[in-house]
Image (cartoon, rainbow, N blue to C red; front, side):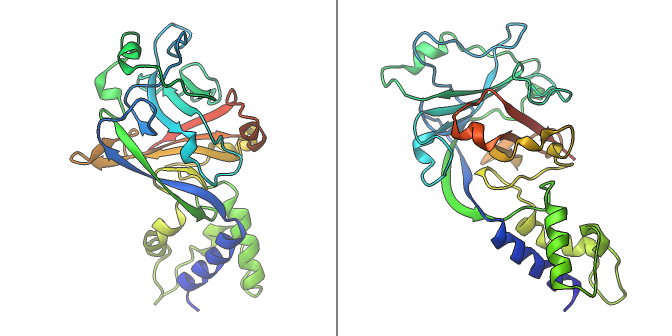
Length: 282
């Protein structure tokens, strides 16, 4: 068995053992309705409510909105109402890299019911989000979300991956023990290089793309590995870059990805006051 076959054998085992339900999100560039699941567009806002602002009074922009009635089969996630993600359109997309769970320049808002009498034109009268510079916006268009439910095993970018992979590898190949996943980067003559193998199987193990639930993808590293942030054990939403001017353009820095994480128990309790926001790029 060559190195690529060994890696895939181990990964297929841990993929089954760590499988979680997830929703893959296809983004279609089009005009959206007020209560659609979407990226961009006009946020739903109950009568009498206000657009989220930061400590300086600057309005945040709707990044994404999820109509929770579409989260069929997603245990622990709300099954009704709307879940919204707002960010400040500054040069960091509202992320405080020193306080990634401080909801000031980003906000996660949950409305447990929807008032059908709310009209978009009334919201547009008060929705005037701050934009520091249009070049700082990760997106310009609005996109309707189309959901597909699937199961996903742990991805190579998740901070738990290395420990889980190594344990299973050593069980399956006791005569070739490793201490870390990257110990396999010992290219032998006549074998495909480790980098080439990873490039070939990247789509299978990296976790890239737009999704709710499942496991994350990062351009750099998983922030939950440090500073006690491992309590944010559930992927709430992931929005990836899309470099397609015809069908839609989303760009986090230089081709990066955005993630929101929450603690599983807080998700069950529909408490969205404590969420970890992250984006990184190459």
